[in-house]
Amino acid sequence: MFKIWKWVDEKRDKECYILDYQCYKPTDDRMVSTDFAGQVIKRTKNLGLNEYKFLLKAIVSSGIGEQTYSPRIMFAGREDNPTLQDGIDEMEEFFEDSIAKILDRSGISPKEIDILVVNISMIAIMPSLSSRIINRYKMRKDIKVFNLTGMGCSASLISVDIVRSVFKTYKNMNAMVVTSESLSPNWYSGNDRSMILANCLFRSGGAVILLSNKRSLERNALFKLKCLVRTHHGARDDSYGCCVQTEDEQGRPGIHLGKNLPKAATRAFVDNLRVISPMILPIRELLRYALVTFVRKMSNNTPKGEKKAGVNFRTGVDHFCIHTGGKAVIDGIGFSLDLTEYDLEPARMTLHRFGNTSAASLWYVLAYMEAKKRLKKGDRVLMISFGAGFKCNSCVWEVVRDLDGNVGNVWKDIIDSYPPQSLANPYLEKYGWIQNEDISTFKVPENYLN
Image (cartoon, rainbow, N blue to C red; front, side, top):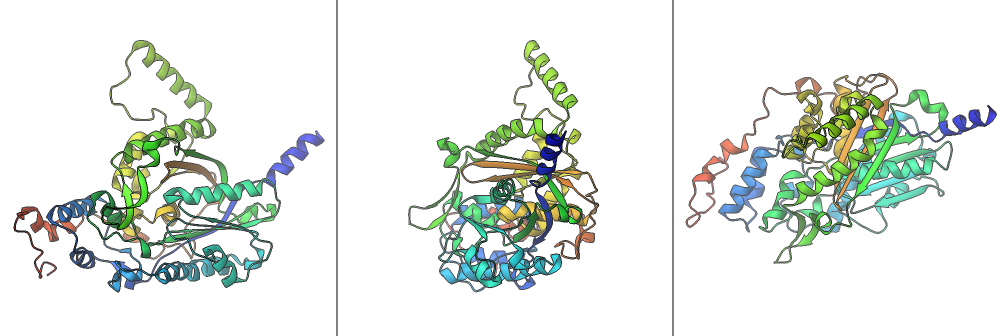
C-alpha cells in the first residue's frame, strides 16, 4: 500500500499545468487593411497578370479578414531589403509586451523561471533570442534553456513536450514557453506561385505560456496536460520537401509550399490520430469503431474516397483547437473529424481576425474559447497543429476550473462582435477588374486603389 501511495504521490509531481498564457496583439498602426494589401501587391514589380490573379484568388479564399497585423518593415516599404535588426526589433517588441504582461499578472518573478523554451522558426541570431530574454529580464544563471528554430507551425506543442519531459525528472519547476514567427526578413519578392502564397497567409503574432508542475499551484492552474503525441514524416522525401525554405531561379529566398502538402498533411494527421485516439476516447467508442470497420471489411462495403476518421471524437473531447493554417486546413480537419460549425468557429474566427500566426495560432484559438466562456471545469480540449518537416502534433488539455476570459485575454474587448454576420472578403469586389484583363496588354493602373 505504501508503494502504491508513493507511486501516485510521485506522479502528481510530474504533472504539467498551464498557469497562464498571453497572446500578443500588435498596435493598430500595424493593421493590414484592404487598401494597404493592395499597395503592397502593387509595388511588387515582379508580378504579372497571372500572378495578380493567383494572389487575388488566394487572398479571397484564405478566410483572412482586414484586421490582421504585419511587421513594421511592410509599412516602411522596405520588405525587399530587410536588415537583421528588423527581425530582432519585431521579436523584441513582442517580448516587451507579452512577457512583461504575463509576469506581472501571474506575480511570478523572472528569477522563479526554471525552464525557458523559445521557438521562432525563421530567424537565427547570435546571441540567441532566448539569451536576449534572459538578459532583458535578468533570469537565473542555472536556468534550463532551449532555443528552437526551423520547427514551423507545430513548434509550440514541441516546446510543451520539452517542458513535459523536464517535469518528469525535476520537481517544483516553473517553465516559460515563448512562441512566435519573424516575418520581417522573410518576405518573398519573386513571382514563383508556390512561394508567393506564403505572403498571403502569414501574419504577425505570438504567445507566451507559463507552465508548472508545482502541487501548490495546482488550484491556480487553468489547464492540465493529459497526453501529447508527435508524428514526424521527415523520412519520406515527398513529405520532407512539401514545405521548404529555399531560393527561386533568380536567387530570391522564400517559403516553397508544394502541391503535395495537403496529401502529406493528411498522412501525418491520420498517423497521429491512430496513436492519440486510444489515449482520449472511451473503450465503448473504440469497440464501436473496431466493429464497424470489421463489418465493412468483411462485406467489402468501405465507401470509396472516404476520408473521415470514422470515430466520434466528441465522446472523449469537448472542444477542438485547430491550427489556423488556412480555410482549407480548417475545412479538411472539420470534414475528417465530422465536426460541426460550432466546433470550427474558434479556428475560423481566429484566422479571420489574426490570420495564420504560425506556432502561436493555437493559443489565439484557445483564447477565443475562453473569451466565449465555453471552457468549463473538466472539459477536454484537443489541440492539432501541423508543421514543416512534415509534422503533425496534437495534445489534450483538461480544464482545471471554469474559465471566463481573464483580463489579459486578447479577445476580451472584441469578443462581442464575433462571429460577424458575414466573413465575405472585400478583396474580390475591390480588385475584380483584374479577372477581365488581357495578359498581352496588362498594366497595373495607377489609380486602381481608388
